[in-house]
Image 1 (tube, rainbow, N blue to C red):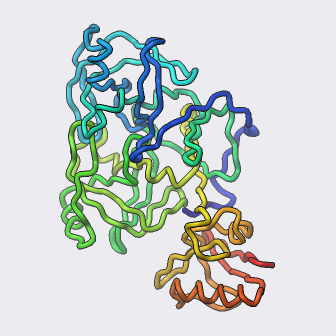
Image 2 (image 1 turned 135 degrees about the vertical axis):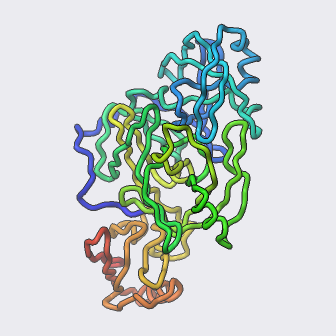
Image 3 (image 1 turned 60 degrees about the vertical axis):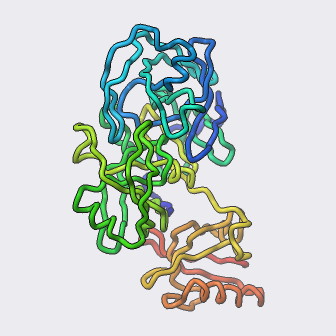
Amino acid sequence: MCDTIGSNKAELPQQDTSISRTIPFVYDNSTISFNAILNDSISGEFIFDSGLTTSFSILAKIFSDLHRFSILSTKPERFYGVGNRQTLPVIERLIDTEIFGNKRKAQFGILNLGCGDEDRYAGVLNVHIFKDSIVEFDFKNKLIKFHKYFSDKSYNKINIIQRGNVKLIEVDVCISKTFKKKGLFILDTGYKGFLYYFANNNQFSELSANPKAKRILGVANFDKPIDAYSLKIPSVSIDGLEVLYPTINFGRVKLPNEAKDVVMGLVGNKFFDRFNFVIDFKRNILYLKQLYETADSCKSSLGITFSTSKSFKRTRSIIENSDAHKAGLIPCDIVSKINNICVKDYSGLGLDSLLYEFEVVNKPIVMECIRKDRTFAVTLRK
């Protein structure tokens, strides 16, 4: 998750720290959900799904029947989801929707949610519920926060590409040393996984033959499970922000015609819960800032763990408020020297041992690093 230096920063008015509304959300089984009120009287828990390709929202059939929405005048309409297009009854009447003071009118389709979700969730709300809003998703405190302006220099600014009702971002995926792909992925807060890749037949054969791949039934598209495979890959990056060794799901999926040859996959909540992320829905801008590890996840007193390969020694995680954090290190910094000692041939254990040697004698530790082709030095334990 590498930050960029001196580039892609937002040029907006100074951030207004006054937040008019906050919405508590539930992050359960990698799904974002919150309570909403319909027609000023009927409440339920709704999944937030920014990846829907239709402009209306979904009511779970069990919820619709319970509150007699299904007896309203309906019309058949084609529903487009990823790998799923079907005709479903759409309520012709606009329904008033309110989420903690944020009011919108919406049309709703009626559908079985499936995969055990139908008993809990009242339905699905799409991105239109936050139209023209600047929304921050705070996974640490499980809050959705609304901002009047947002311009924080510690965030990376990433442009969202709009295709019809779908929001996409460009993702660079390193699946293996020889198999790298870069393309548009749907920004989908309704997808429970980290990343899903739509492989065509040839790519699917190559990927599924990998001995590390494990066949799963984990990508739920409402009432239709999709066969998929799970594979640990070297890295994923969005505009320079990198995540090392994530898990990717992939499989054959029939996309709607408007998505063919355009969309390569889905970016889900398991990616975004590694960041503080803000979406400016009006200007189509995504802001990302890495979340630091907690102290109990790292044995080093300096607050740093490493990821090693034959080519690079990288910082894998940095503990918040640790010596490494205070010195300015971030995950994915390449470490070339420690106290003038070249560490190219060191293993992860060797790096830990080297740092420990300097720690026990209380000696300052100077680390030479590379970030986005820029070389710099930091001092720990001055």
